Structure formats: C-alpha cells, structure tokens
Image 1 (cartoon, helix red, strand yellow):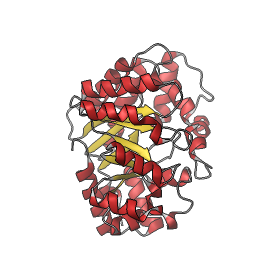
Image 2: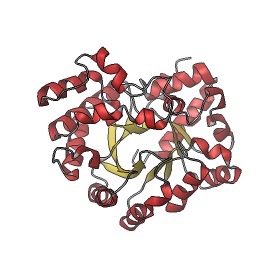
Image 3: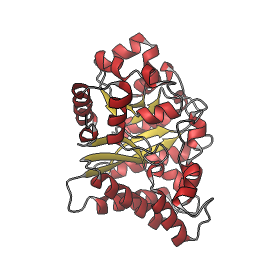
Image 4: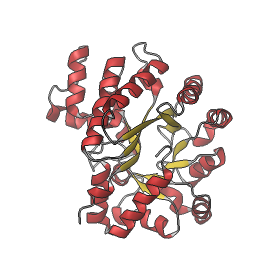
Length: 319
C-alpha cells in the first residue's frame, strides 16, 4: 500500500532539524564556517540521530552542528527556501515550519531579522505553486531566557497572519518543566496568538495537563497522555489535536517499541491525532515516509490514514 499520498500536510516540522546536508555544506562554504566534515556522508553522524539514539537530550545534540550555519540572514533565507522547495517537490500542500528566533542570534542577528529571513525564504519557495507554507515561532525551555521568549511571543503577534501562524515551546522538557512558562503563554493569550506546546514527550501527563491549562490549541507529541485516562478524555472532548511524530518518538525514547505506540488507542478514543515528521534530517524522514513506516511496522490501515489526514486539515492553524 502506498502511504505517501497521505503525506500532504506537516504540522510539526523544525527548520533547523530539516536542512539537507547539501544546504548545510553550501552555506558553510559561503560563510567560511568550519564543520566537523566536508562531505554529505561525513556530516551524517553529526546531524542524524539514528534509531539507536538513547534519549531526547542526545537527539537534541544533533542541532549543535545544524545551528552553526543558521546565524546569518542569507543562510536562514536559503535554508527556509530550500526546505520549502523540498516539501513542494515531495507533494505537500501545506506545512507549518517552526523555529526559535533566539537560537539564531549568536553572531548579532536579532530575532526580528531572523523571522523576516525565514518568512522571505518560505515565500520564495511557494511562488508559482500550490503549496502554502506558514511558520511557528518557538520559545525555548532553558535558563535565563525569559525576556527572549517574551520577545518571540511579541514578534509572533506582530507577524500573525503575515506568515506566522502561532508560537510554541520547545527544548529539553524533562529539565525545564512546562509549568515554568506561564508568563509566556499568558502574554500569548493577551495578544491573541494561538499556540502549541511540546509536551508529553520527555515528561509525563502532568506536562500535557499544564499545556492544556495554559490554553494550548495543540500539543506537540503528547505520547504520554496514554498514562492518564481522564487526560485522554479531556483531549478528546476539547478536540485538542496531538502532533505525533512516530520515528522521532522512537528515537527520543518517548516510546520504546512501535508496537506500544499509542496512536491507534488515541484514534479509538476520539483524540484528534496527526502524523508529522518533526525533523527531516535528524530523523531521516518526511511525513510521507512516516505514513509508510506506520503501514509497514504498525499495521496502519488506509482508513486510519485517511482519518489522520482529515485530522491534519482540521488541526492546521491556517489551512
């Protein structure tokens, strides 16, 4: 069964984790950046997690190399444009590309210039095509970055409806609890900015509950909602979509075995589950491959795939 036809929408896709090696090498050459390798094959161990990855923190280590080439406006523009073209060539009709502007300021570029560069690159990629590309601005879990996060939320408000669709919270969930980010999402609510939150990936159901309490329109991953019956009922009754990313979830050990993946349970419980890629380079995937993997390894049926695609249409911020 060819499942790639269901990979038309990707709602959980990180820009920095989806750069082709060729794009990385080209930007590095243009900007004089030293990388740990100078060929696509040589770079692979540094930018691809592999199925033997042991944790989310190990998975996130791949981004150290990827972010090196995303500290100048031209590089960010090229990255966004190349990713958009890649998605278009794969047959996607809609994608929400997320990134954290504060992670691109290491060489003096401000957050707003980073946002403008990505928006310009995505706009270029969707010229003369049917694909629609939007971006989600990520706040980051971490220490001493409250003001940077608040600036990200304000930027999302400024560019909302002009390419920006929402804000997010990403990063090391187990180290920096969701509950610590109440101020960011209070501001988002005040400014009328919709948001999704990575939750229930490296931390348990309480993290998802807190995201729901904050007012999250969607949940990134949500794998561990399965541990809380009342939470599953809440997600279903409020029609709060989950942005699930099967291959990534296996790599980060959010789930140990695909046989234990809760996607089918969620579908049967009436939860609005969607399937996404997370990081095309780090996880060596794309959303069509995710559907095929579920068909081959999980027994996903065509009827279930159709429901997942319908859920993605429903869950999209601007589709």
